[in-house]
Amino acid sequence: MPSLKAVRTRISSVKSTQKITRAMKLVAAARLRRAQDAIVAARPYARGLSEAVSEVAARAGGAAHPMLEKRSGRRVALISITSDRGLCGGFNANVCRTTQRLVAEKTASAEVDEFRIEVVGKKGREYFRRRHLPVAHELPGVAGDSVLDRAKELAITVSDDFTAGRIDGVYLIYNEFKSAISQTVIVEPLLPVTPAALPAEAGQIDFVYEPARDELLGLLLPLYVQSQIQRALLESVASEFGARMSAMENATNNAKDMIERLTLEYNRARQAAITKELMEIVGGAEALKG
Amino acid sequence: MHLSLTTPRGSVIDTEVDEVTAPGALGEFGVLPGHIPFLSALRAGVFVYRTKDGPRLLAVSEGILTVARTPDGGDKVLVLVEQATAASDVDRDATSRELAALDAEIAAWKKDAGGEYKSLLARRDWVAARADAADRAAPH
Image 1 (cartoon, rainbow over the protein chains, first blue to last red):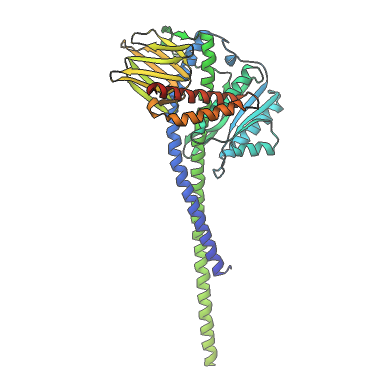
Image 2 (cartoon, helix red, strand yellow; image 1 turned 45 degrees about the vertical axis):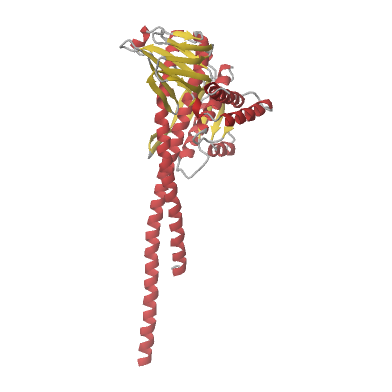
């Protein structure tokens, strides 16, 4: 049995760990609320752009722009979104593993000839480097204001490569925010852009376009792609905080269980010591009686 | 005529207006009530809308503007831009400094002209638009 002092030190160390995990949980919860608001706020913009793209693309027909073109080529770019910081459960590992599995499967079945990964976040960068996966660009993780810049940079990179024919498809891999306790990794096609079907009544309005339709598509599509990437980044940020919140909640609970167990052990040890002392006194008294 | 201006951060303007002037991809244009259905790309620049209280100026980054008829015969102008700031909120000195820093960065660019470079140029356009809006709102 460990000494009383050792158990006491142990308890106080677990207690301070618990303080840290509880504080991290509270911070994550506060940030999560802000991140959720950001997702909701971004929706009307994304919906508006998506409607405009469908509208223009439907009237332009078929392959009016290279970014709408379905190609038979087999070079694929994957945008994997992870975070810079850990302590958020399986958040980063899930994205990394999904990416790795996708690369392994598609390479084995010869569906894709060449992969390149655009990785966002330090955790993903470390993972892919260690496993020597083909990373094209490494970008820092996003937080708050950097979402827009990062989305723009990624959108321009993949749109340029796609239009120039250097890649034939782009997928987004990120944690979709379902709720504070549930995030799922999804793989979503980004390019070529598949415009949503137009609602029936929309066909009657005949818009005047400026600049002309094809040129307008050239301006609209990059904005649309950017808004999609931005949405994925925002979802990922919210998921990260959700995941960290649950992870820290679990850690706090585990610490609580541990403290209970250690306290029990401490009390037992203390009781044993007292009993032992009593026995010694009684033993001594008995001996004196002789 | 109803104007709503939305960015990825949420709605910025949602009000009744008399006139809108926007920085179109092919040049500045105005929209008055009764305009034909219209869809235009916008570049970064100065956006003006006039209500009965007078004109207001905003700096906007790239995006789109659509004009559509509402079922009750009114007009609805929908503007989707990445960023928007009221001219009165622009810190003119800060934008000058930012502009100088970005120009220096652009001039010194040695790497490939990929996504990073182009997003730098876009950022410069946005800063220039803000400076422009501030100048037009309060001429020296």
